[in-house]
Image (cartoon, rainbow, N blue to C red; front, side):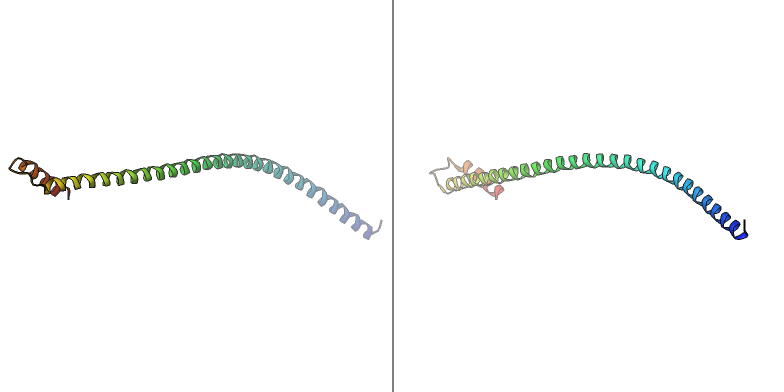
Length: 125
């Protein structure tokens, strides 16, 4: 065997050794990565499940908020109508009180009523 041939065999042997060691190292790395991928897939499934639960809860809360807004608008309209009806009724009573106050019955029979109406109108205004 010539020297050149020996060098070539040595280089090829070293290259084969490097390939075998590299394959072994890559196999170990691959095994570790597969474990990590499996772990991450499990975590991703947990995250997806939590996200779906959150989305369901958010949708439920959004429906509840929409219902509350509708109820609030209905109550606000009823309150507005009740306040308007109360203002009209109060106006009617004030007008009736004003008519009674301007009516002058004969004698002193209604002096107490007149004083009471005057006091009531002054307090209300």
